[in-house]
Image (tube, rainbow, N blue to C red; front, top):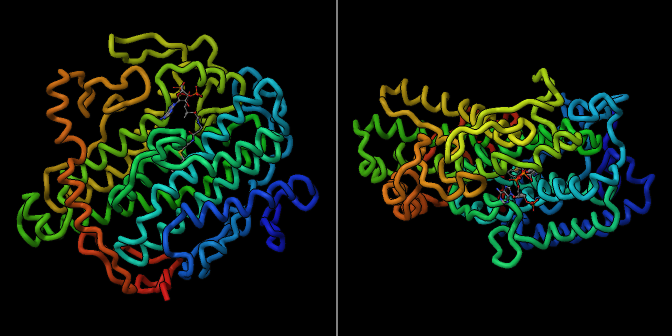
Length: 470
Ligand code: BYC
């Protein structure tokens, strides 16, 4: 197993010291990253001591160290999962051939584009979340926000390493551009839709970490299968960190639901107005936030029919998550029926892989829904939270801009526009949620709209001072 060298300026397990040119190039990028963090990272918390985990090994057991850190001093580094000896390509037309240790010339620009698109999402999410610290519902949540933020920063490092190490001058230029685009910027926005959406409140943050980070899980898993071995190894280790981000989302929403159910019981009502007056979030509002962030994240899988997806798979650049679970790894001559706006269509499987991934992503999203609905059922209520279909509120692919209900029915445009107010958060909903957003920072205390978590971080009590604000 490779150990991580922490004595170096850039912690790494890739023997950076042996490649002086690469080391110098990355050490040149490092202050630009720190400047970006200072300007675009969490505002005003640079001197706080935050109880953070830092990756110290790529061993599945005990890979992280926990301790109080000033965020700008976080040891962002480059960690690849251990190499699999003699790894072979596991899918596509070159299945069985040795995995690539260098980028084949013919795939260079496509691979670079994929790595840049992945890399772009990481700083984008930090930018989206930069104001949330000011309205944290507890120190526990504040710490989790910052944990997610520093790890997204590390995931940016992961992609920048690949760009610098394998893509020469183009890669170095792309690494600079990753710090120059900004979420929501009118002139230089982030590449993918969801990462330009404003995130003004913690309910959105929990939905984002539940739905959008789960897209991250799916995309990273498909890169973990890649024939380009350094990308595969990088993404395998990133997935270790990603699990906590989705945990933050799932437990965050679960705690919101729990608190709402308590208030419903206390008041003996499910009237949204009365629940709101009591400072909790009524379940129909939770549903509208789920609809919004889920449908936004559905676009991140790209178009239903995509020649990019066919090329990426056939060449070996990008597989399906957990490729070994499938029987056919080549998919030539296979097709699948997809529902298009003008009826069912037979589509070559290779061109339909975005949709295959999107549907399996939606099934994965159901796991949290089941848990939250069990809470609601146990409390004796009939309402059930649901997920929208993959055709609802799309802005990418053949369903883009079409009036489809969350259940997947194509309806009249006027009806859609009228009903959309009941399906996604209205301005009134957003103003209400905003009215709940007040910073709670006494150790162990929680805002009134969210229940405490079941346990603290790393076996520490809930009352622990996870962030010392001085
Ligand atoms: N927004 O053939 P198409 C994460 C573009 S999240 C804007 O339909 P394709 C994280 C597409 O780029 C995971 N543009 O789709 C989570 C292409 O443009 P070019 C991020 C979009 O290429 C939380 C054109 O439309 N990782 O890690 O098969 C916090 C036609 O594309 C969108 C990745 O996405 C959109 N939603 O698949 C932090 C992996 N959708 O190239 C982090 C890398 C499509 O013709 N990216 N387009 O100019 C990919 O694998 C693919 O680019 C996509 C699209 C899956 C995104």
